[in-house]
Image (cartoon, rainbow, N blue to C red):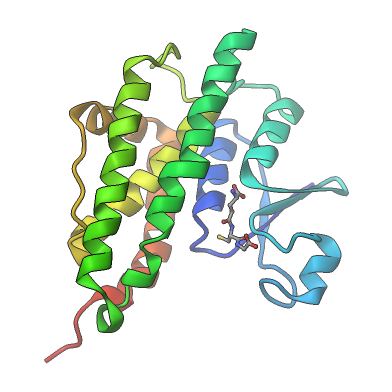
Amino acid sequence: MLNIYTVPVATYCAKLRVMMRHKSIEWTELPPPGGYGSAEYKAIVPSGNLPAMVHDGFMLADSEAIAEYLNEAFPETPMLPETLQLRAKAREMGRFHDTRLEPAVRAMYPQVAYATRDAEALAAGGAIISKHLDALDLLLAHNPLDAETLWLSDCGFAVTFAWIAAFEDVMGLPVVWPQSVLDYRARLDRFEAVEIELAHYAPAMDDYLQKAKPPAQ
Ligand SMILES: N[C@@H](CCC(=O)N[C@@H](CS)C(=O)NCC(=O)O)C(=O)O
């Protein structure tokens, strides 16, 4: 039995759901018992982080550790390349997402609420995200991974691109997308697992983004 602890809006659980859908893994989603950061939850997941997993009694936290574990535990439809060097390149992309692009997008969460939004912070955040998208443009230009396959490293990008686009839409986040990144996003969105997950995730994103709207006159 595979239990995933999460909350509906969690980006990194959406990332995991993309991979679990792609590999046809069945899972049960649970809220952290006692709430996020509670002593009750830390008794199960000592770091208190989300997402976390318990698979047949084995607990693991951190989406990338979980994704790699599940990729091996459920070997059908492998999502890491066969050779040492290509696997390393896939991990390089995944780390770029988890440690650079997504944290820059997450840094914009405090700007979502219309009432307390700071125009300068929004502009500065957009510039940082654009800088990371430029770096991704270069990474993609040298990316040796087969473009017809959905890799572990693709799952986070598919979700984070949806957040960047939503932030552009609801709060005018100023972002410049290199054409190669737009093409990459379109390519990811064509995978069924990505399409299904983004449709499933949209209501949680919409709920979170309600506070971005100006008050009704
Ligand atoms: N790199 C982590 C990031 C996950 C993450 O940021 N989770 C948030 C909730 S959405 C969290 O647990 N924050 C509290 C903390 O880091 O202590 C992963 O991939 O799992």
